[in-house]
Image (cartoon, rainbow, N blue to C red; front, side, top):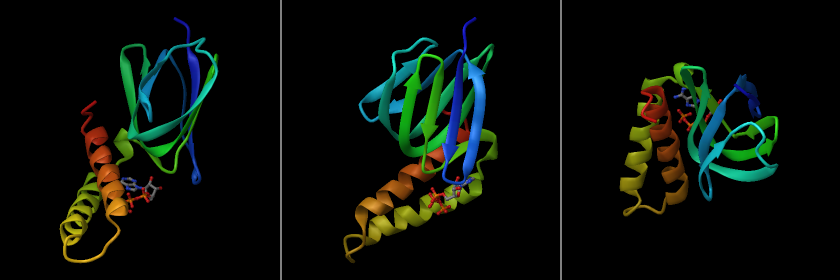
Length: 135
Ligand code: ATP
């Protein structure tokens, strides 16, 4: 089986490196599936999961936006933050989700940053879903 080398890196350092058979994730323009030999491209990513298939197993990484760069034999994902599913602290993500929900509810009464709270909520829900492997 042909493979493609994948690196997921953040400002804090590398998070994931492996040779895999297929990479799939959500680009800003929609679902993206990449096999070895894919044409070169660069695309912005949404807050979401990166699924990495190899043999019988699929690794899951939660990413918070960023960019994907594809070359025929190499995929590089540059993300603001990224965590492998087994490294996610679910209690922390649940706490972040609650805080974001409270801020969104307060929004009607106070002039708070709605978009910022909405993105924090998306990051928290994505981490919870990835850690529970809901992808
Ligand atoms: P929090 O309010 O819990 O800090 P956040 O969405 O604001 O959540 P980020 O700014 O996206 O956090 O991330 C800051 C750093 O903490 C990053 O290195 C990220 O990988 C890590 N991180 C955030 N939440 C979790 C989590 N639930 N489990 C593991 N690492 C996390």
